[in-house]
Image (cartoon, rainbow, N blue to C red; front, top):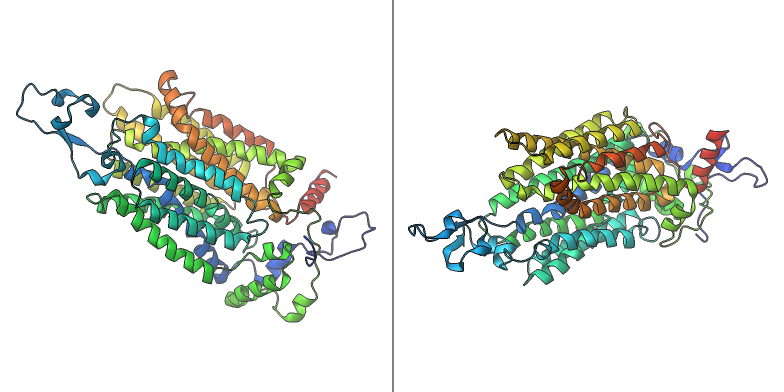
Length: 520
């Protein structure tokens, strides 16, 4: 990292005891807490503004539930007793003049481009392209927030790409251009949640880190809930209107991020940009009033000396560092395996709501509402919850109720019970995802934290890509090989160490020293 200003007080390099374990040497985490206090209004306002990006992220993730839904239809020759339309359930088997859509053709991509008889792979291409964009974007952009761009710039650029591509999607002339633009949208939004989560939690101390992280989950839920509301009010208009309504606010939000959001002082210190980090701390601290533990004077900052990360975590090398380090690779493999299982339910169930014999707007609303108690439970109990136990419980519950939701029953009440089982399973998946992301933040040091969280989120998306195939397998074997597999992935949590109440490290060396010390 070149001529970066050191990050921790220097001591005699000949001493056998590592610098970060010297009993008189504060860590970067404790130093920043001394400067700006444990938590205050400045951090809250910054965290809320940053976390609001999840609102727009949720909209683009689930927007195709409405824009690509197959509209209902009706028979046009009602007085013809010989008309086979009345007994048919598939319009592809009927003459074109014997049926018509209930609403104008432009209300859905399926009806506008006459895709109702196209192969399922063509109908699902936009959604698949979006998730493929998420996967590739996550891999391509994962380390930029840890290296050259930083958290703030990464958040700004990804939101900007998502807003512009969403706006252009409204002008699509066919399914192929539409799918390409959905791919670009997915590529852009891939790291929004990761950058927002890491940036917001790096502004506060360990006591409030979990609670601040949950703000993003609430914003995601609100964005999810906004979709059925917007879609219902625009149900008689073109599907393009939904993309217009979601792209313009996202662009305005990008402007706010550029001018109002501060970069993470932890990341700035690690990159050797000490003066910028000090300026950020000075902007945040005055609003905190009495919560400030240390006066932010020039002399206080001028007396600080820091030791930078000894590894060269350069562009795209953060993932290499994670893979080459034995303890980091073990942790990353475990949390990614859990994330893959979470994604099967978290993305798979909402996107499959159109196949249920239930009102689409109400189905999406109920799923969105089920995220609220999940976020509330995480917010209230995250400080008291053991990460390992919580993940194991939530993943097991989701696996059990997922199996029950795909079982078949003959009693009329079974359809209602299936929806209840689906909601309980989705609620458990939401809770598991909330805990998993906070757990990942606490497991990895600052220099690679954004990359690690991004990899976990991509594993969640990958699980969402595979969920339709597992659902099809479940229809054949009774459900166990579908969402029931999700509960098995939760067992990987036994490979991880508990992090509740544990301070976060800033460098790979510091984390290794702490591990070595714990075994002594």
